[in-house]
Image 1 (tube, rainbow, N blue to C red):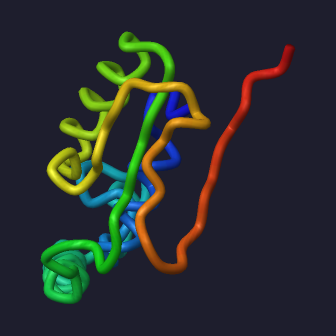
Image 2 (cartoon, rainbow, N blue to C red; image 1 turned 30 degrees about the horizontal axis):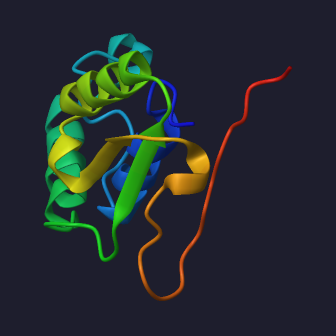
Length: 111
């Protein structure tokens, strides 16, 4: 039930301690009077320095639809986190669950 991959991608970004919006280059506040480009660059550098190299645990994203998994993988590539997510095509009940503790998130479709 990974759908477009939003939950897996967001989980990965959180696990990497990656600040939101780092892929963007333009924000509304940048056009306000008093915006300091140098302060913004310093803040971005500090935040990037706190990122982790890889998530502590495994992130698994599966869907019964190959098209959904392909879409999720593409979105993860765009977000720069595809190498950290284990994608697979299978029924939810056949999703491999890693050993040890963890969290399972799903967003089932409404019938």
